[in-house]
Amino acid sequence: MAKVSIIVPVYKAENYIGQTIKQVQAQTHSDFELILVDDASPDGSADIIRRAAESDDRIVLIRMDENQGAAAARNTGIDAAKGRYIAFLDADDIWYPDKLEKEIRFMEEKKAGFAFTAYEFGDEDANPTGKVVHVPDSLGFRQALSRTIIFTSTVLIDLQKVDKKLVHMPLIESEDTATWWTILMQGITARGLDEVLVVYRRPARSLSSNKFKAIKRIWGLYRKIAHLSVISSACYLAAWSIRATMRRL
Image 1 (tube, rainbow, N blue to C red):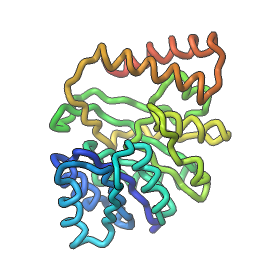
Image 2: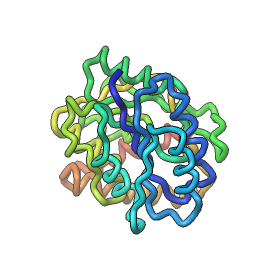
Image 3: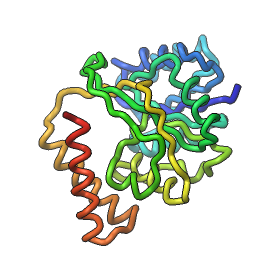
Image 4: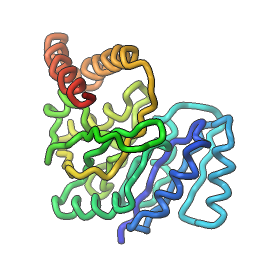
């Protein structure tokens, strides 16, 4: 089996991290290293991880001296990774037990270097809500500009086909989307497995505030990462807004 390096940024996650570790340990693909990067979390997250690592040598705890944000934490994990594959998992999201097995098999069948899956929204307790985000079979750079459909906790990358340097995330807002675009800009096509293998825990929050912040972030990505003109950015933003609204209905 090919080893998967699973990167988890950890910050104020003591309510979730035990469950996160257990769901990874329950994966049917057992050849993995679970790299949990504690981003100077002020709670008991590190202690929970340390106890779990005592009985499972696949669990790796890395502690950062000061809080630097999810992108820096993920990059620290990527630098430490020893596996052929890189997978990302946020501490409060849910993987189904066969997530890795099915996604690796899918990548082998498609000869893909970059894959992502469908996912379902969950409530604050990660109970599935029935709202599913389906994904296309393939996604290129231009297609990705109008649909930020690649959800971080569904991503799997084959480092034999994608340069590890491309997987490093910039220290900006929406760093994950910026990373996917950077990879796709190299001519790499992302392949989508349209099967729900992940639940995205979405706590109740101000939707109007989130929408404004999301629009601001995506505009910044168009201008700074994709290097689009103002007119092109506006056109893609209109298409993105429609798709983002429909995805959340």
